[in-house]
Amino acid sequence: MERHFHRDLAALKNDLLRMGALGQRMVQTAVKGLTDRDGALFAEVRRDEEQMNSLHMSLDERCFTLIALQQPAASDLRFLLAALKSISELERVGDQSINVVKSGEVLLREAPLKPLIDIPRMADLTQRMVHDSLRSFVDKDVELARSVLVTDDEVDALRDQVFRELLTYMLGDPTSITRALHLILISRSLERIADHATNIAEDVIFMAAGTDVRHRAVDQLVEAAREAGEAAR
Image (tube, rainbow, N blue to C red):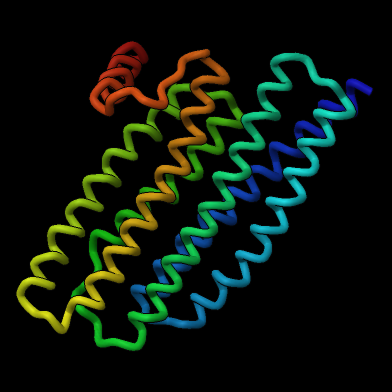
């Protein structure tokens, strides 16, 4: 029975990584649809959402079944509870990717406002955060989880930069307001994806190290990452 339980845990970890990879792909495809002005890519993201929702329901059910039937020990129970939270965070990554698509579909009907530079950078960072947060969860890698928290600060800075730049467009040309607002909404969705990855990483740190970092200041997180890097050298 114990051997079957650990086999089921291993399969759950693999499927969590698969769900994370799907979330990364949705982000990448949504932003590529925006930059390439390709509605077919937006349709692909909408199809992927169906798979994301299916994984959400099936993985939730598997976690609840393992908890109910196997009565796992404390460490395994903590893992399963954290897995349930991570599954929900990943499903929201999919939801935010759909929000990018919705704004992108509006923008396809308009002339481009400006070259897109910071939004693709945000997308690259958020994809990496989703990947690293799930990898840190599966491997119980606290330092990798901390690096996700630090990267979140970079995403926030890019979001602020996008907002400031687009505000100047809106103030200078009222005809740009709709396009600028949708680009701001897209940057906000990407920032929320980064937040979902951060939530997973925070749970990893709590699960593996017993430290609750949910309300720590960013400069404390940066300092902790720096100290860890110096210790490794």
